[in-house]
Length: 404
Ligand code: NAD
Ligand code: USQ
Image 1 (spheres, helix red, strand yellow):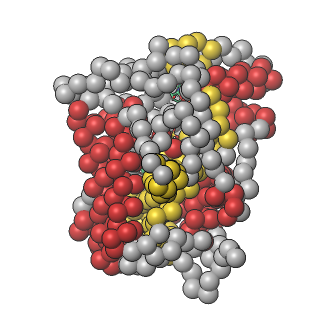
Image 2 (spheres, rainbow, N blue to C red):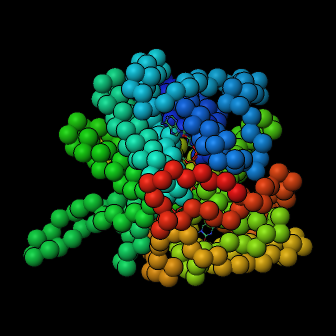
Image 3 (cartoon, rainbow, N blue to C red):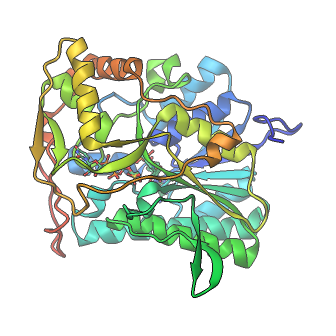
């Protein structure tokens, strides 16, 4: 039977790495609200990328210090804060010895595929930051908190778009009369997505070799911005990226519709992915923490609730925009990426449902509220940041200054 959140007598201690980011901030607040003892670990490097590239969140976001102070004054709850880079093992070791986590949720990576394809130095940074950071987390758990459960954010993009059904982590294959259950083949299509494949391999190995307990959450594309906790005060507001480097498909389309920019469908628009509401991101992470993997188990969940093609998303946003009196147009943009634009896609996603996930499916009302949210902040939109500026084919060793 499944444990309820924080159901044990002692409050579970959860370290949220990357807790100043989009998924991490919403999750940290939710867990803190739900009686977990929460610490945020973040280097704030994401805010630096924005400064360096001249980008900004659609929504104004407060400093992490103001956010945590506001949370305390709204709810009386304390979130501990450790500012530092998990690639610095001494720093990470210090946070482990001081906070003593029972679970670590690891969101703290460079998560943009286009960012990883800007130039050699960003490709190298992405793989170094992500792979070494995760390795350090694995060593910190082994050294200081052997029983700690690692909940690691992976991506559906690890699987690519094979012409067969995508399973959850593993596939049973019969070959020359013998049968085995093996890791599902990985065909990632950016240096970022590949960093997640390398992480998964390292985590799987340490589960076998050291008896680590780990859950890899192969998450689809996240949309939405409001959660119960971030709603409480404007200083708790989450970030919402709409630019061509960090913005993701549906969030971008809603902002584009709000400012009257044609929806940017890349290529033929048949690219199909798994999607989920940010309220389900936090629900999934909470379920994984409340029902930990066993010692030595490398558990993989596909974390999304529905599949859409880019064309389907564009048409949903067009219809929802019509109702608000927006005249939404779509313009096919030459695809800056190298990816299949028409393909089979059918990915399993039952394990989180079995643990109790109650999905918030994409509805007219959510689209409506996301569009209204984008309209509310439309004066903050820098339209020069909307078109994609990073080409998969033109990446080279030469440092590139990305400026709109
Ligand atoms: P984000 O960029 O908003 O947040 C990531 C946070 O991690 C940032 O605050 C950043 O400063 C921090 N960070 C990065 N490297 C760090 C390091 N070395 N040490 C300490 N902190 C570090 O990203 P997000 O959208 O919240 O994504 C969070 C995680 O979820 C990522 O691992 C991402 O790959 C995964 N994910 C995101 C989506 C999505 O649609 N946003 C979808 C699938 C998976
Ligand atoms: N796309 C468009 N137009 C746009 C933006 C995107 O057609 O304006 C297309 C892309 O070409 C791609 C698809 O939409 O085919 C998804 O792109 P995206 O930018 O929304 O998402 P992606 O690059 O895959 O990355 C995001 C997150 C990443 C996470 C991943 C989950 O940034 O951290 O790992 O979603 S998944 O897609 O399942 O791999």
